[in-house]
Amino acid sequence: MIKKLIASVRKEILILLRDKVGLSILFVMPMVLIFVMTLIQDSAFKTLNERGIPIVFVNEDNDSLGYAIKNGLTHSDLCDFNDSINGIPATVEDAKNAVADGKFLVGIVIPKGATEGIRKNVSVLVQETMATEESQVAITDSVSITIFIDPVTKKSFLTSITSSLREFISVVKTKIMFQTFSEQIAELIPEKEKSPKNAFSKTQIVTYNEVYASKQIGEIVPNAVQHNVPAWTIFAMFFIVIPLAGSIMKEKNEGSVFRLHTMPSSYLLLINGKIIVYVLVCVIQFFLMLSVGLYFLPMLGLPTLILGNSFLGIFIITLATSFAATGYGVMVGTIASTEQQGAIMGSLSILLLSAIGGVWVPTYVMPELMRNLSVLSPLNWSLNGFYELFLRGGGVTEIMADAIKLILFFIFTMTIASVVNRIKRKI
Image (tube, rainbow, N blue to C red; front, side, top):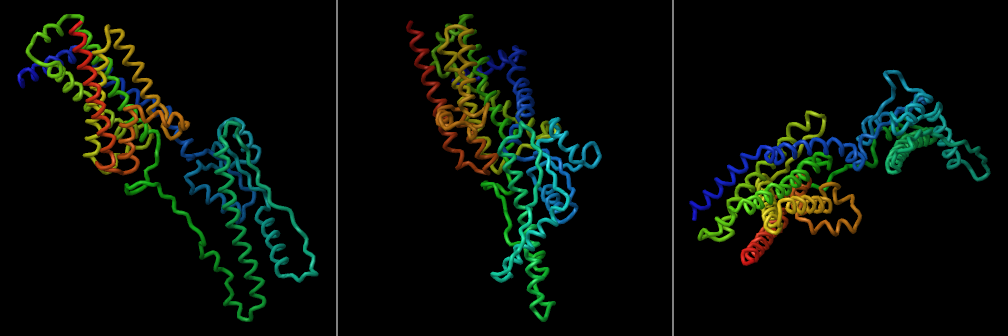
């Protein structure tokens, strides 16, 4: 039995090595696919994460408010901050034209005297608070900040920008208010040096700590690399259905399968050679794709693929995916009657399963109906396993359910292939 298995494996390796075009499809094309899709979707994932929004900033105030907003935007991951255009400090007209030309999504103009306007407003508020009922205090106009908007800018971008501006303005306004109240109180306190005049500048009442819900140490931000490398690797692994089904159909057409059936061995033993070779091919595919995410994509300025904490978990989900992909290829090759039928059936079904499984578009941006359908795709089970490892920092325990479903899918497909082969032999 061992000799038969070794002979079957050797036969499949020789057939595979002779097909140079098939090898290039299996190894080179998936790598090119990852490069192209990751570069194309990089900006889309930045949109999803709302980071790196290109803005141009014009500070005509040159006072507390203008400096506070500039400092806040400069140190924010939300935007790609610019206060100059082609090396020249931006003016209001330049900013408007640059946004209109599509060079920036948003332009922000802080008008002259904005800080002074806030001081006057705060002064009015303090006087109203400290004044008697008979006192009449004049109300001043509010500060108006101009925002130039590119028509293609998403509403969520604009909401994020305006929310940040409100936060910066609120901080400056509160600081000025505190200082104004302190000055008023200081006049009533004999020991002025004890007044809390500068206390606000040393105190940050509320701070924000953004933490992604991940067990992994550090922040794992979903990006084009974290999605596309595992997604298109899984797609490539399942796409072996075409050469695998073609190999099975070629044996049928050449008549070698009938000679194999005359051997005193079961169908599953004869097909085990194909399973071993193509599982090995899938594993090699995975490591090649992994090298793209770790070494080659960073050369193009894209983020480096983060592998998570469990290499054993990666091996388990990769092996389970390899068996599921190989089993599906064997089933399609057994069911198909011609080589063309197998190629069409295999390619279209994989495209469909990858589309609903979250390979083309992540499931978390799909409508609810498609998210519910995605659980039917074995590609989605595998992708969820890699997400658990790469994004959530999970381990073997967390991916075991997805791995088991993939192995059960392999058993199911091999059972279907065995039954169909038995029926066809009788016919």
